[in-house]
Length: 348
Image (cartoon, rainbow, N blue to C red; front, side, top):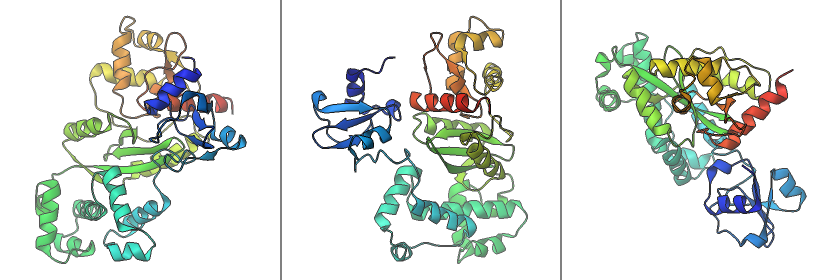
């Protein structure tokens, strides 16, 4: 696919997120440059020019748009949100009220909108969810219901019991048979990622703007017969470290345990993906041949698309038969970034 002036302009008109990171549009009449997906009103085609990096835009005298913030990582969690989440992780009994947020220089309504957009719940609901998750793990480790309730900040056993049952469907006393899947946001150079893990290992790693994300979350919850809830997990802790090393070019293989349910054919396809060497690529046809199903190219492509653990099960290493980048749920710009990253560090 050749990136012509017309193609990039059309992508900007349609606010196509698949072109994120591939080009920036600079507007001559305003001196501003934007992401392809910027929601601002688009100028006429003769009044724009395109660049492949924000550095080029700035060197030409353009300034970043205040609507789409092209210098920020897509969907990145703001530092002040990270601090709130870190504080909750260290002490789940903390209860941030609007007054506490204002004391930190934060606008409560802004915090509320951010959590609604990124977690589907208000910050107050997020805090309750986090406390209940912490309580669940304490109970699983043998602590008493009474001790757990007061440790995480509940003022009454009845209030704790009602909140617990609203999430897990059972009382705290009957929670031993319940299962949970921990979920966390992970920041990366390509934007925010959502990671999920069970006791057995990482079961999901996707970019937060992936269109299939909600469907995938429902799928793993149904398969594991578990409740997905915000919380810490040792496998996610390991994943964070290994991802950071990967993006720095210091890691070529991942060792964090994975658990990825799927059909026997899907499992075979995903195993073949993990066998593609770092810094290398295969076509869908070559991948089909590698699993001894040479005529199943389309089925292989579909199985690749059903992979829920990006980067670690590297479906980004599969390309079209003509060498073009095709079919990546995280967006072709991310696929290109990952392949370029691996190529650059392949021999180091």
